[in-house]
Structure formats: structure tokens, C-alpha cells
Image (cartoon, rainbow, N blue to C red):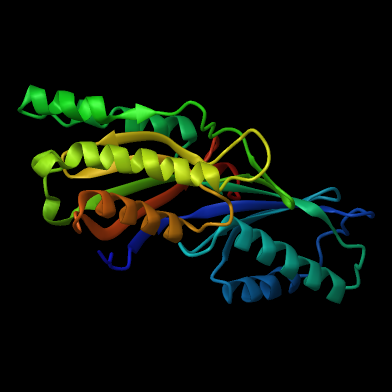
Length: 267
């Protein structure tokens, strides 16, 4: 069965932090330095939202497209900054290590509570059906969304809230779809975990909530995979398990972390 292309509806933001290799960073360069960098990042479809410039570190916050992975953001942020600094006369270089953190309007605590209480607000007429949906929900405490994933180039906090909706608002409880949906999510989570890098923290699905016509997931993604790729893989897994195009191509993906995006925006 072929799955149509996923149409991602996204709100994606990341902070990137880099450190100087030997010498402290210079004072923030001339007035045209950041606009020139912004123009270069615009070609990568990265839009700078905020920045912090200190002698011991530089941090940029970006709004990013759905097809940009955290590792892509890290490479473009570091590479273009290093090139711009060298052109400005500072040639001491940046450390290999970087830190990338996904950010959203809501914090990790708010997102997880929102997912966990979805069914409480549904007010379903059939208590048996509500009970079956509640039984289908689960959390995996081994997927620690507070801990970073390690790579050879740095640390990544990469959390996504994914929402997949059935085509035509088809009821998930019909045609025995409910157990197929939950089994597909568990299987997909295992695949994500297998794609993890070194260290104890691992990618995977932290939590799942099943509603009559959509599912909510809190996911720790592998840093090399974009939100678009993860949303497409989730939808493919769900439709593959159902044996039909049960879920609509439109999937929502939003980044979040332990503190909100407003924390890094200029006040």
C-alpha cells in the first residue's frame, strides 16, 4: 500500500548554542553582521528570532521549516557563523560541540499534561468506548524528554508533539482499528529507539493519547530526522497497520522543551 505525501502543519523552533575554540568571541560585530547572517540563513529557510552574544558562548534561536532536522540547523548555524566571523577577521574557530534545543510556546509539563487529559475533556456519550480509549493510552518513562541525546557533535533536546487525524474524521474504534493503532505506535517507537545514538537517553514515543478521530503523541526524535520525516513515518506506520489510508495527510508537529520559546525571545 502506498501512502500519500504528508502535508505537515508545523510550529518548529530551535535554539543553537556554540562555544569558541581557543579565544573568547569578539564583541558583537558591526551593524551589518547579523543582517548578512540572516540573509544567508534565509536561504536555508531559517529565520532568526533572538540571539545572545557573550565572550564564552553565542546562542541563536530560529524558526525552522518542517523539513529541517536539528542536525541540519546545527550545521547551518555553526557553518555560517564561522564563515562570517572569519570574514570579519576573527579566525580562532568554534568548538566541535554544540547544543540544540527544540522550543515551543508551551513547556514540556504543559504539553504532557495536555496530552494526558485529552480524554477527560472529550465528554463521550458511551462510557465503554471512553474506557477503551483510556486503556489504549500509555506512557514510556524510559523516554526521558528532559535529557539530551548525545552525538559526536553535541547534545540535542528534540521533543515533538505530533497529532494525526483520521481521514473524514473516521472513528478509530470502528473496524477494529483501535488495537492496530496502539500496536503501530509501539512498533514505531521501538524503531525510533533503535535509531538512537550513544548514551542512556534514547529517542522514542513518550506518551500516546487516542481520541475518537485523532491521536496525540509526545515524541523524542533522532536528531538526524526532521519533523516532516517523523510525521510521515508515523502516518505510514499507522496506515500500514490499518491496511488502508486511515489517517489524513495533514499531520501537526510542534516543538517543545522544559522552558518556553518566550524565555529566549528578546523582551
